[in-house]
Image (cartoon, rainbow, N blue to C red; front, side, top):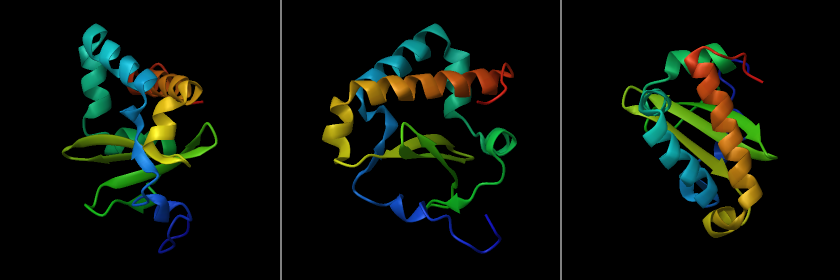
Length: 130
């Protein structure tokens, strides 16, 4: 992304159909299991990942309204926002239909779980990112 240009999907950040990734029960179950079975990996995923995300995906193309760096990816055909600041990391997805439709989509929950497994492997140093 050229300097000074906003990423075309950055405007979706505040859209009502952009929801927390873990609003899907399949993704939430994955997160709960991972926090129990691998607390250190879970802590790394939730912590400040600005440098790690930049290593994986390059420079952040956007900032959230609070100033967090935001990487805009595509997962399952939907824009996925991975953000990080000193306070920690967060993950949102723009899903047409909003939170209720996203929560009911088991395949998307499975896709998000697979995405986070790949991300954790990369954060552990077991990458490469694919």
